[in-house]
Length: 302
Ligand code: ADP
Ligand code: MG
Image (spheres, rainbow, N blue to C red):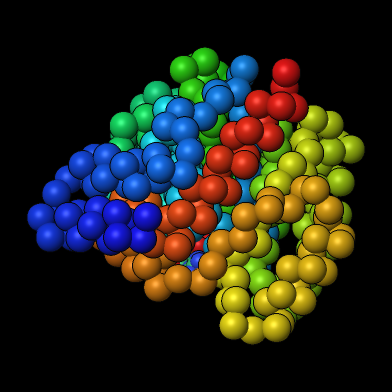
């Protein structure tokens, strides 16, 4: 298993082949661990990935879970709602300021059809890019009509029948962009970094979720908690993981994402870690986490 993984990783590094071929190599490695195809949900699952803390792994999780789902025959759209555009970068999608982006959809009544582009090299994976214009969105949204539901409206108008998942990557705040994301989704995935202060701010996030549920979107549910950047060498990480599990029980995925250099290197190549280094611990963990999500969703909706 390990040597297979190394071989596949080496092949993809050596030849700097297109990501699609690296993806095939990843599947050869990961196929040993499980199925090539996962159950597709009966209807498109819209999942917001939010946590107002920065640097907890929102974008990394959005990109890598999306890549894992796409590699197992699910069709996935990543909506980049962070002005930084990190998810767009990691998916190899252009997002300079002339590109039509999520800003046009949310602020200017544009359509998703006009902005969605395929992610570089991975079939089944699409991205609605963010540009720096989005940095002004929090202010520009304030005087607008139905300012909390603009993303929802645009998603409703978009034909998601052909999609299995929409993953929305949020900025690190609880402003109007994140509220739009909560309003537009059925599910919330909260990444929690297994570090000190991990739980700080969570009550504020959950309070916002409650308000959105009461006033805007009664269907919203916190469906998934993902523990990220786990450092197995520290007792602290294990303690935090235990604490999160005791708070949130079954919402917490069994799979924990380890801290791994490969995970942090991948975006600078415009790749997910699954294509960048398919045999790495980070790639395997994100695949396993996505697999859990796919099977949980399938069960819930039977
Ligand atoms: P957020 O979107 O919540 O701000 P990011 O996903 O951008 O967080 O992650 C913050 C930083 O941590 C990034 O530099 C990213 O590459 C790095 N990172 C995320 N997950 C891991 C991991 N499992 N191992 C190592 N570095 C990680
Ligand atoms: Mg981010």
